[in-house]
Length: 165
Image (cartoon, rainbow, N blue to C red):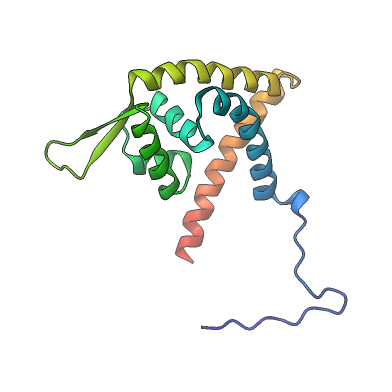
């Protein structure tokens, strides 16, 4: 089905998107900059990609997840998570256990070697976060995290609403 477009008024030949005030763009750019800054440290020291570290971070906090549950928790593409999992398995940083009843189902956890890396990278990440947030008073930090929680809630609701349209 083809939707017809309304003609644009003269002087406005294209839609306008003010990226500097477009929330998804702003959040993405900020996230990429912060992730890249942290990644410079762990990628050089441990040969980890951002995706691999995110998988390890999730498994360090929530051991025993499947790859698809890791993808859900990180909101990363399943293919990217699958590739990161394969590299981490090859590097011996995570382990996979298969369900006895269903060999197709597996869960992942950090190996001892994975925990050795995790135990070094997690404090680096927390130190960087403290450095970034250090110029912000405690009330602003609390407000920031409340607003992020609220945005998360509203985004999930919007996803459900648009899926039903």
